[in-house]
Image: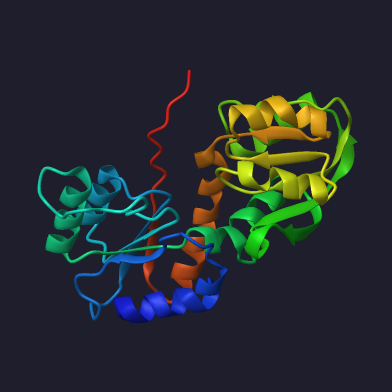
Length: 251
């Protein structure tokens, strides 16, 4: 299977029409579209460390969640950190492709993976393009109990939360940054909303609107989906390698 064929296969599984407006996922680097895909490095982010590993492992493709060129690029020049990565990837003939908001929304993607990890039942879609999920816990819990459940399920170093002061049964989830979907979660009848991160004012104001917010970290809410990318890569006979690189530290 060539790089072009591998990308087309993934687009069948993770359709481009699920991508939110303004996102820049897809193929961001493709020196050799007809290169055979034998080894694939799977990562949440395409950092310089990930590029190093892909080169050392002799990979043909880096398959990521976050787009490498998020925010745009004005040049491809040595000495610019994004330019340096692209130059090294092109020299090594390694393609980079990412599935960002469409991987959040697709069945079995980020939001479904997160729902399953915390034990939500009967999860349904809400938000733009069905990017979020809402479901129910087996039994109602208080905010501190739910924070402990989330921390354990995701292996997060901590969970930041605001407490609306009522038991939690109906829970909304999405990975990464989720401040723009808080109103949708309230409208969907959520007692709580779990995501990677919320803005300060989201956390401060949420109890007034009757919803508890839980922020478990961008990395910890999204990285589990790499397991799904592993499965998709293995289905076509390529050798998938997952890297668990996380540069964000906590004390």
